[in-house]
View 1 (cartoon, rainbow, N blue to C red):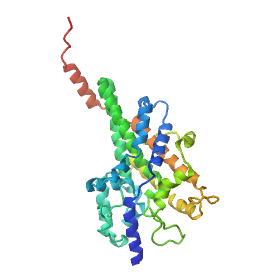
View 2: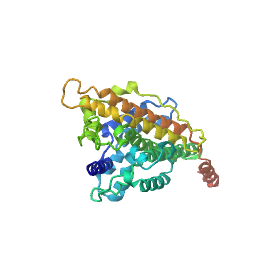
View 3: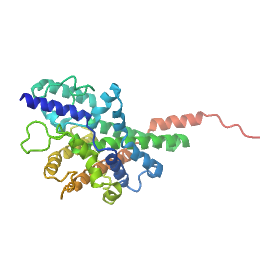
View 4: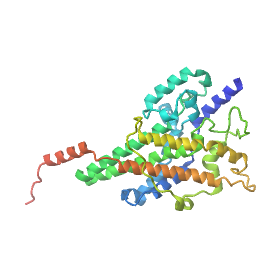
Length: 345
């Protein structure tokens, strides 16, 4: 038991440090999402400059992780994953999670305290970012970016009605930024190892004999993608069309887009076992032996899933964004209050 708990402690430490998809993988997901947008989606998003920026921003939150500043590492690190097993340890049902980050934090803290025996002790020397008592906040990072994007589309509509060209351009720029940033976290969710405590090689009881290699996560994130030659141009014809997510009020009062986000992450979590099975079967290897790249369709499928979910969130935010009537009224009032221009003689 002691060795098992130590193994889980090391595993939870590695979860906070792990990344999901290297930059090429994240970039592919953002590009697939752009390819999956409907024809009537705002055209400014598809200009070469904005499309390139959305693709570039796919890697931004990981770039933040390259600095030593503790406040940023503490805040940013936990947004990249959700260890769904830890919810069960704390007695929480994923189908009942609060969409409010800090309300959930209170619920989890209480559950962790009530079921302390199910959690391994935390080694302070390993907890340099002060994050090990938490399971990760990936669903909340996604829904918060979704709401920011919806807000940005709302005020863009107001500026389009009563703003200046410069204000419209700035609002569009904000939308491009939010779309790109949001893509990173949705992409994180499509990497199964970012939904599980088994994030970097199997730790603890291992009846299936899965790999315990501590380079496993990094290999799936980017090493295999490079080895297998997975590229956007090859996946583009398979990009999946965005689906507008349900936004009607639910009888249980939960935010419907948050529910869709949790469901998305749960489905990716179901791929943890199959991912380890592929590795066990020698289909995700770098050694060039026959069949060593047979896991390529699995990785491609995960990238396609990420692109589909991201495009669907973008489209839902756009279609469901109401015009910011308060801002529009303010813009119209300021316009009417402006002095008439002095005629030129």
